[in-house]
Image 1 (cartoon, rainbow, N blue to C red):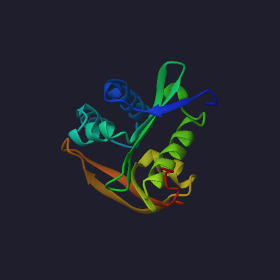
Image 2: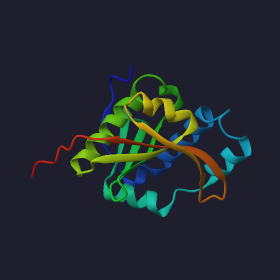
Image 3: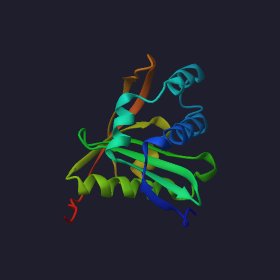
Amino acid sequence: MCNELAFRVAAPDDLPALWSIRNRAARVQCAGHYPPAALETWLAAAPSDGFRHLLRQGHAIVAEQGRNIVGYTVVDVGERELEALFVAPDHFRRGCGSQLLARAEELASQEGIVTLTLSAALNAIDFYLAHDYELLAIDDYAHRSGVRLKRGVMQKSLKISRRSS
C-alpha cells in the first residue's frame, strides 16, 4: 500500500517529473487499448500551455514517497474537470491513485465544484467507476497532437466543502 505518501501542491519546476510519470504510466497502462503508433504520437506531445498554467495556479497535487514524486493529479477548476491523474508504474495497484483522486475531489469541492467531469483513457474507466463516477459516453477525442483516441466521458457529483477563510 501507499501508506507513506506525503502530498503537496505541485510547483512549476516539477513539470519534467510529472511528464515522465505520465509517459511511463501511459505506456504500461494504455498498451493494448490503443494502437502503438497513436499512443506514441499522443505521448510525444509536449505539455500544453494550459497544463503549465494549471500548475502555476496551484491546482496540481503531487504524491511523494520520501523525496520522490510517485504520482500526481491536476484539476482544471475553470472547466470543473479532472485534467490528469497518473501514478508511476512501480506504484500501480497500491492505493496511490485512489488517494490522489480523493485529494483532487477535495480540492474541487473546496473550489465549489458540484460536478467533476473527466476524460478517461479506456484502461482507466473501471478505476473511475469503482470510485463512483458515472460513464456518460465513449467517444473519439481529437488530441492536439493530431491523433484521435477513444475516451470515456465521466462525471461525479461532489459534496461541497468550502475552504475556511
